Length: 325
Image (tube, rainbow, N blue to C red; front, side, top):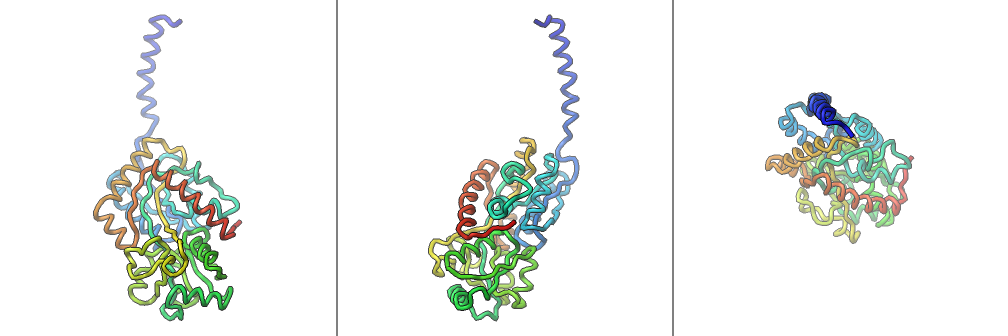
């Protein structure tokens, strides 16, 4: 048993050690933060990230820089964050593809979405839209599907990449409608739209925001939205279900993640800030102006949300037969 003198000395040593330990943990944040967007600029992921970064910077007292790192359906940017130091200074703007679909679509990922990334907050969701050039003969989704049945494999559809919600929505539609339309994956929405406008693509299936101005100005025609009900940004456009594919429902979503093993206090601080941002009236307005719906959920709720999405999209990938190396 320790003597009383030794206990006092040990306690004193602990008191002296505590400040040293505190000094060993640098204040957060102590330098600019990087919010990685695993897709090119101009798409819904990028727009959402920039709105969050703009408002997060003054709350943290450090710049929050949006870093576009596109490639491999969002895998390259996601992997970079998963392998970053878990100190809260590197964050990921995740998507339905990077956080859920890709693990079932690709034979192997360089990171484990469940273990190597920590969920901070779900940000927003939106419907995908099925669009065709204004000159297309297809005036409705039924017209398009009839054309596809008449010319199996001759039509092509563009998406912002393999594993994106547009890709999987289209594959689900092909399965349900029993049609064969060829997939042309791009590196983000901004690269799909010029080819669609020029008629080099027969159709695109993608998030609403980057297509909305072109639809409103009559350069593109929206045939259907993929949500359960009509989407507020395109109230006159029918759903896929209304167009004859009963029970069809799929929405894209976006959130913020940090590397796994990020300390809980940092996770909670960032999460609280992001949730506060998403509830601000001007942010709600900005996100709705581009066609998305704010959907703030904290870490625990976001965890449960992703688990439910995993169950759904694992089955969609299985039914569609889509698989990538």
